[in-house]
Length: 151
Image (cartoon, rainbow, N blue to C red; front, side, top):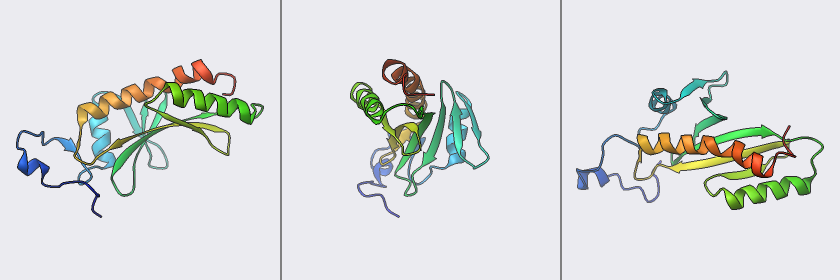
């Protein structure tokens, strides 16, 4: 499947462009685990999901069309918290923490996500820095706006 807008000849036209990029053509969970291994504690869970362990447990998944890498972390929401309190917390988080997207699921979970787009390539350094930054945000955001709704 071709990625719309992805020019496969970029490297050929620009020889100074780093060849060590993560692209839709080479991305795999094994590649990502190897990239993370030197910098972070990573493992595959029993379902085969790649997780990075830091401040949070960050699920790392590749979108099926290989256009992006998704980071996701999940927190349980208290059954007693109201819908209004949940929505207020999510809206404040999304307003003040622009890197992440927060939302509440129907099964009492507060979910944080971020996507790395792969068209044109992603450097390993940018991936590592981005994952570390993503990992640092959810607990701070919860402390700021969602402590009263989290279990």
